[in-house]
Length: 336
Image 1 (tube, one colour):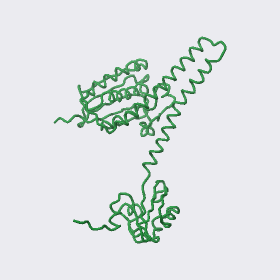
Image 2 (cartoon, rainbow, N blue to C red):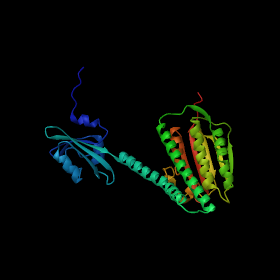
Image 3 (cartoon, rainbow, N blue to C red):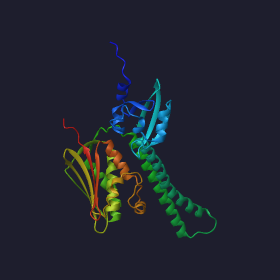
Image 4 (tube, rainbow, N blue to C red):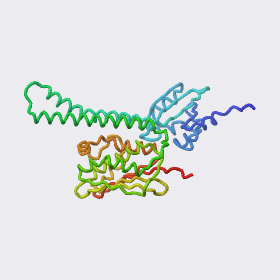
């Protein structure tokens, strides 16, 4: 059975992106996306009633084969890609593609490269400066030599931690669409991570208490879940320990059909202004304190990506002067 030719209007209605058919400055047809963007009465009217952007209008009215990146077609801040293609008899097909996601992704990439470069440049400059001093001719006091050597060692170790975290983050992102399949006891993961952080907690004068409902099975990647627990507990110890906050509490339990890992401290807390950005790469509430404590600024970004790979959720709640609670919720295995 032959399929009857479709009208141009029917064809553009099949497009998800805004699309118009324009002839002689008049809009002959507009699909649903275009009507939602430019107004329901755009069809049959002069194109200048809907589009007032000078460059976009010039491209549309000129016809021919044109592509143009514009900002401000219907939203003052949103970037668009305007495409004009001739379709015969003086008419043109005009398509408008929202570039917001692409532009945002590119901005994130540029920001990430800039931040990573800055984070690596700072310790590298310190290493270079102290190494140059050590290489100079002339006597150097033993105390100064040891201090310079220790600084070089510490800054090199810091660079190595940043590079390892960056590589780990890349591996996690590469696997983000591959669902984990192993059966893991989340309670055991929490205990192992607590043991790994025990030395840091002892230096901070902080106790780690693990409480829960016994074995809590989840389907996951063992190494990644240990990394999640380790990062959360390490952060709690680094920033949630103090004279009046000497205990970090870790809870592992079932709640509302999910496995829950909860890390609670009674530290200084975090201002609400910072909470939405805590999982951004290299974002720090207090950069100086973070670097002094050995943080790379990537810990919570890694946690977020691992939790997303496990189809879970991450929630951070905090109040100034009242501590911070970080909660990870993961799916439990199907009982059937």
